Length: 276
Image (cartoon, helix red, strand yellow):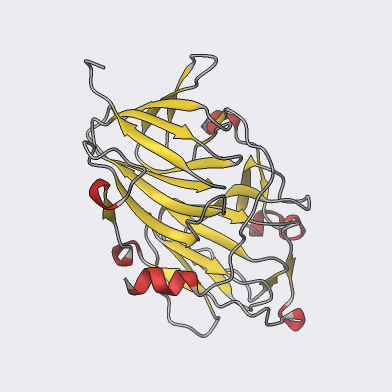
């Protein structure tokens, strides 16, 4: 349980009072720009999933790195949390030995902490989330200590719990969960990874004001509640959910699916059968 203990030592947001809505962002919907416009094509590309990283509120976006990319030392004005979707990423002090984080790994970069970011895969993609904006890149001469500490968790160090260990996943499923950050107290903001087995069929019911999900690994079919439209979602795609809405999901491939879920309260994962 050391990985979980390490995560809870970092300061984390506890509330997000923005109401999420039933929406889907697929690959073709993503609009790409430069993460740091001042550096142009020397900067990684950024694609917005929800919110607006140039505004003052919370937001989530994709960052795409070229193979061999390595940033100069820098700081950010806000803390961000990241999950590796594709490739190999390193995020640490400029003098630290490279620790390449593969798909499914998680890290936290505190505001004001000097660091570099590097990439070593043929394709390198990460999901980044901030609690407040705008997201800015600044010189290390402006470095400061905000009391938080960086966290790097390789996917092999995550602690996965089975459906028998958690009350909000139906016991007849093989769904697993790894907690990442936040407290699971009533109404508090938290994030976790949900692992759906191959051939899973079921539903996710959102019981909270704010629910946002990003596909980290695999492909799934998602059906929105009110429109009855069905979407195929791939790694890097996003869906949001209104409070008390139910989204129907099917894993049709022979590969398991991992979803990052950020929710301001409770949600339920239920498995169904063809007879239900």
